[in-house]
Length: 391
Image (cartoon, rainbow, N blue to C red; front, top):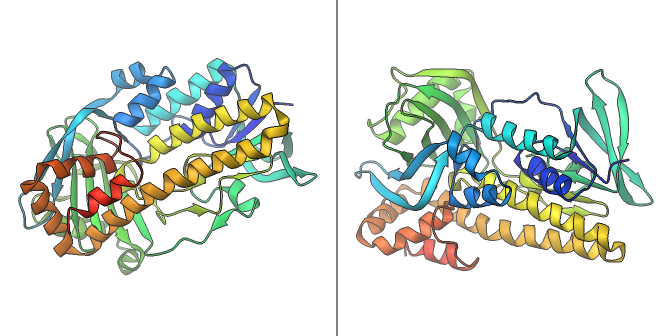
């Protein structure tokens, strides 16, 4: 019987498994996808992500595989583009490459990989004691363990089975996009076209390959019906004000849709179990913090499990403390994301913010911090500084 069973082999699950395996714990990862897998979201790696990868001993490999990013270009039509330079290096790196590297490292360190889908949690005396897994042959088996970790993303089955999912509030947004050729050289900048409840994001993966996402509210997506591609093209052209369009570009691979872009849980723990990564809560991808939160929560979950295995009498307190840290971190990031949503929903505020950023350069730090690209700020500080962009 393994010490820990983890649902999900993405950045949260793999980083947690890597740390636990290196500490000598017996770990089983349950992952249904064959890696490398295409996953378009989270291909912007900010400075905080690179530091987290350094802590795992994976930073040098990521830097050798990624595409250097110098800054972010914000476009609020009809104003001229505003470029903010990153104070620390950032990268673009395909998730197919990053996720495979992390999972391979975990397996090399001693984690066991099981191909299958977690379908339920195993309970014993009111405590999680493993996962029920449907394997590749279709057989359902129980993998029992002292602890289970749900790192199975938005809509986490582990969170749902434990009754931890909370109803999302506010406007629901969806992202559509993929990898494209033909947008040309973006000059090492992530480009964000913002306005009227939507945004059009371009993240260069190389000189001529681009990660492209169009993010819109549910009601607008519903209007597109079967003409999703035409809707994406029209929305992108409107947001870009003629500066960018899908004309003459070619998509590589399938179009990807993600959403709704909000997932909340009542808490990130239950007796015998933790939630990590998107399974513990999802934040608007505009801020580019998904991979950072995955790696940070994966490392935190591993440290928590190691402490709990060392002193069973403190297990519930340690797991609850983990849940508190996750809740606090998500709360401040959600406040920043709420402010960003306000800018996308109210064009006059977006234009005012762009004008103030141009006139008051010191305010740039607040936006860069919200993107994980600037100096780390105290939790109450980021939303307050962001509010100064429009007040």
